[in-house]
Image (cartoon, rainbow, N blue to C red):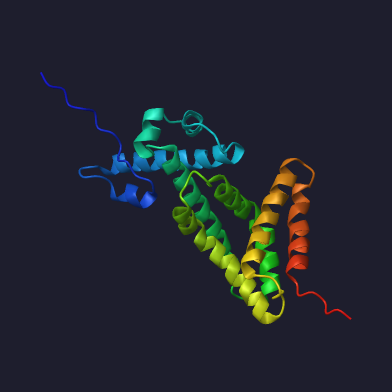
Length: 217
């Protein structure tokens, strides 16, 4: 008597694919798969944040799923990391969208963004750094472009308004922005900087770095 192989949950790497489902997949099966993927990605985000070398076993345990379920959706650690990075980018981009950065003076928009979103932006920055060597450079660029473009556009607007300096490359100013976010989070994590003070410290430091230098006498 022949035995039929057991059906696995549809393999996918994003909620859009899960919603489509596989041929013959019912609504309950799609919903279960979607919940599993969401739990895995969120657990991966926290695990990779604590340890960039976190194992798939540790992530499965944190997500409350079996290794079989995890590998059904993400056959490799690289694919899971890419999905986690995509989730973090979407989260950061939604937070930036809510800040309406294209309106009001650029320096005020920068301060508003830093105060409201620095934690999310740091998480995005950290994952980009951790993904080096794990995700190919072309894919990394595609992943982070959306968020970096918003920051770059805000700095460019500040330069046009005369609020931000133009004597340094704009790409360098974007790098300074993310580097300071990551440094502030690291300092807050070791309690060398109080979490409640981090937004104002970041705002003061960034605006001082970005402002047009005073003309020499």
